[in-house]
Amino acid sequence: MKRSQKIASSAMGALLLASGAVAGFSNGIKPAPAQADEPLSPTGVVHQEGAYTISAELANLLDDSYTRIANVQGAFEFNQKGTTPNDELFNVFGTAILSMCSKPAQELVDAGEGQANFFVNVSGDIQKTFSVDVSELDDEQGVLMGCSCMTGSPFGQAYVAGVPLASVVEMADLEEGVNTVTAYGADGFGQPLPLRYALEKNALLVYQVNGQELKSTADSSLQLWMPETVAHYFTRNIVDISLTREALEPEVQGVEPTYRNKIEIANKAEESTFSVGDQVSFEGVADDLGSPIAAIEFSFDDGDTWTSCPTDGATADKWVNWSFTTSFDQPGDYHMIARARTADGVVSPLSASLDFTMR
Image 1: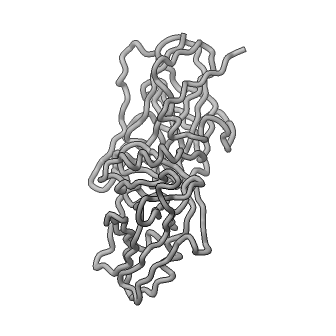
Image 2 (image 1 turned 135 degrees about the vertical axis):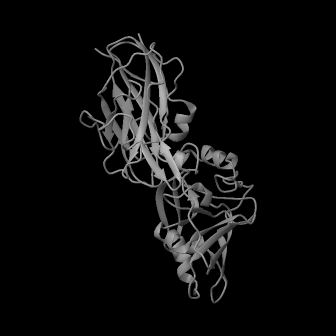
């Protein structure tokens, strides 16, 4: 009987896939995947982002010591479940480069050291300023949501609970022409957003993350979360919300062009050795923020051919946790490349790769 092997999950894999791709996939095993319509070529692999031309061409980089297998077939599974543990989630927030993400603040402190405070002041171009305890409003919502920086890998997904920003906006008597909302943290940090964008995305004023109430040592412990929006806008410790009329509506910053359609392999590459005939499983995560992931694609011949595995029904607000299981009947050293393709036709500018050995 053939054995089933899985490349060991690394610490990064544990962070990204706390309850995701390792088991319990919601969509089941899919039929043998189809082949991608094209190898690495300009069609579908080069895309334009404003003034940038982004190329994903990575073929023919390996030496002749690697075993190359064309059109590898296997069993593919995916889901969009899984949450990042809170200690890992806020550790990442706290060490992120400030130009990429919202300024860090101490959250989820030990009981007794912090307090839950969800008061926020609302001001700007409105008839009367006011304060409100967001947690006392009646329209709490909960949602599983991914969080990613403008550059770098996807790093967080959580089930958050809070009140829609729209509920607070509706309480304000807006002056004519108000088009901008800015949530300010206790340290004065704030990023202006088009009011229409924040409402369309159903931005949440969050007071609970993964079932744990937010606390801080001082000031408010509210956070702003928005689906399909870079973490630069995920302001922490919100004390003020300003609704203003600006001459020019602010632009929404998105993912840097070279970091669109991110993909990670959440397996350890060191000492990954298996026996010929073993069923070997590869696992990982992909997200884009701008467009749903439409397929995960794999190559075992340095990008000459690609196996395309559809992710039908995936949405852009959450990660895609994926798994691809296959076997090999030739011994040798192998190099697997994984990339993602979005619904709007963008191929991952930065693919992910993994070396392993069959004996």
